[in-house]
Image (cartoon, rainbow, N blue to C red; front, side):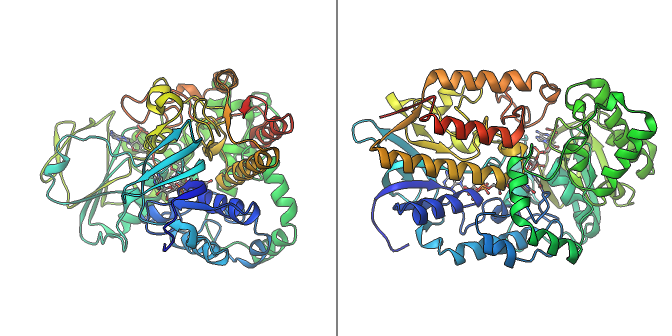
Length: 538
Ligand code: FAD
Ligand code: NAP
């Protein structure tokens, strides 16, 4: 970046899907002067950082992309139903080039702090490169799953082998051939990585704290006729996903599972299981999210599949999820995950039956009083989701208030896009918006377009600041909690509930609106049409 100017209309933090589109919209639609700061060395966000073996999307590729570039929707050819990380990164690099985005992005630059100056009404943004810039608007495109969670395991610094976190996997990968490898964690990341690592490693040991319900991804080439048909009718696809519950072409079965016969529901379960992907989770019987008995029927189907696939009944029992309802943790999609535990070189250490991790030692891991030796440890331990990357911005709003203090009991936002006391700050797919409970490009595009319209409105009406009112924010937080409290979601120790990290205040992080992302979009549009109800504009 040759430009040394330090005053901008907007500073955008992050250059993943969100930051890239935000830049495009503000610069090319509104003509604003925009600076994007990105900690990584290039664009891509999630798809730049997560290079672990097996990393690929779980959303079908025809909808895991930008829909605002209509021509590219026609031109781009995905190689598979769920492309791998390098292919998605290639796609995003292509978008950056096609729209000349990189000239306004400062790479290798982490935003370390930002303060709202109440006199000038500008954000002063500091970076780790020593720079400071000012901007009228500060837009956090920092990602919901970008702040790595490396639990403070005792003794990690004494480990003599190699270790890494999946979201900071080295460029060029790691050669596991002939090595004794540990994978810590069994979330969506580990479920993708474990079968791949097991193919290379001499010995793979998986440390499981909580067993997960996995359903088959069924990846593969997509029928060219289907690809053609989708391209011919993309407008309709885009309209449907925007209006849908989860940003997918998935719709609940319009009947309670408790009202079905065993034969009828088995047929439906088989159909969804065979289709693969998120159908089993997001196009199932809706009462499974509300009623434990309904949930048990769906969960039981998966448990039977696990017992059938895993040959050793003791291992199968360890892999059977217990103590929480199906669908209340993020659904991992698997390709040979359960089958991998039939391999002779794979061992499962389950915290509940074998004992949890006590310490990392010089030569490996001690768990349940037993020493396990490793050459490499892979931590697939997830993220400080949603609030982590926002808190790390060290924002200071009116009167020097900080998110750390304001969110001591969990996030408080208005619509997940604004925070009271932090004027002209927008958070793309922020906490208490549908974000991670959706096919994320759909939610990202909705927020980017809403923010762009809002800034355009302010410019036209001569307003310089916008901020959520505390009353509107309180009502939104109460609404988010009221809805989720009617479901089984709050019973799981999931990262949705902030329960993956010791000490994180227990709170549901996203928004599970009664009409999903479609209803949320309508609500946001209605608020804008009513003069930005719940916001103070000055
Ligand atoms: P990110 O892609 O996370 O980008 C945020 C960027 O902000 C990062 O590059 C980060 O370096 C930068 N940043 C953060 N803080 C700072 C700072 N202080 N200063 C400078 N830069 C900063 N979602 C789906 O819908 N479907 C999927 O199939 C799917 N697969 C996923 C697979 C994996 C392995 C992971 C981890 C997530 C997946 N997700 C998926 C969620 C995924 O994060 C989103 O789909 C999407 O990529 C988010 O884009 P984003 O731009 O909002 O955030
Ligand atoms: P995750 O779901 O949070 O899983 C982390 C795993 O590490 C869990 O099994 C967790 O156990 C375990 N763990 C955490 N702290 C631990 C500790 N102190 N001791 C022992 N075990 C510990 O993280 P993730 O798998 O990286 O996935 C995060 C999210 O990223 C997903 O839910 C999904 O949204 C996204 N993702 C998407 C894809 C895709 O779509 N293709 C792929 C990967 C990730 P507990 O369950 O007990 O907490």
